[in-house]
Length: 316
Image (cartoon, rainbow, N blue to C red; front, side):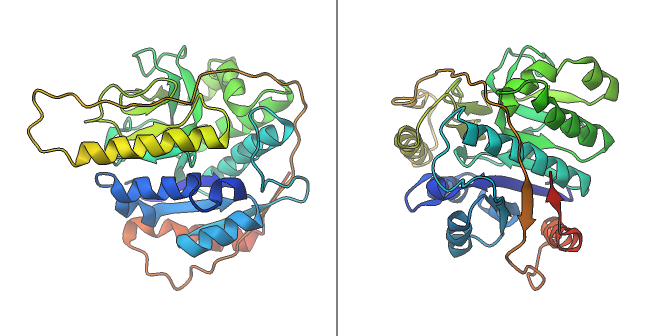
């Protein structure tokens, strides 16, 4: 895992409730191959107080990202105004993490981690992202990206890119971050800043849109192309059971090719909305990490906390 790298996810109260998405997310780290230690690098960005209090009950590194404009504690349905605000707030916050000099892996909480992804990331790449559809070529801008899983290195190119991405929301009102990315990823500005961009193979970083065909190699599986919390939970529970059955199999499987039994309730669909987006974000740091004994690769957390405390950042 590269130095000054954190794993980030966002969470609201609906997804943080007991036996909901967050519990499945953490379980995947515990039962994956070589993933448990990555929990030491995971910071949960809570979008409301309920999510924050649940987070601190089960995890060490929890931050509260609070706004007075919108209550994010309930489920945000796809492409509603609340959903759009949540997605753009995420892009704004991730840009601020890059500005502080941290690389990050961003993961939605409905991404299940089955293997350490870091050995599978492309080396010396500024920005790499999972896909709803992968064409077979990681450099192909025709890949359909999914913002729910990405690895971004902090540098001038990535910082400029995130600023441009966030600013582009006003040019494409009513679209969420992923659709705007599809429109700007091959723009003149993006080409001019020279950002090195790659898209991740769905065989390694799969999802319900395009499931990995090889459970023996897959790193993550995402409950994308799936609407509704109860629908996601149904299929994610089956997904974890598939994995548990796979890891319990005997070693000699030359004549057997295990596979997923999902998606089941999840189905691919696309919705459209035309609402204008605006957001105001305040970061409040609740936990005190000063006394935590971090391992070397975990040390960026204490630096991040001190930086944010010093700046008392408010993002507009």
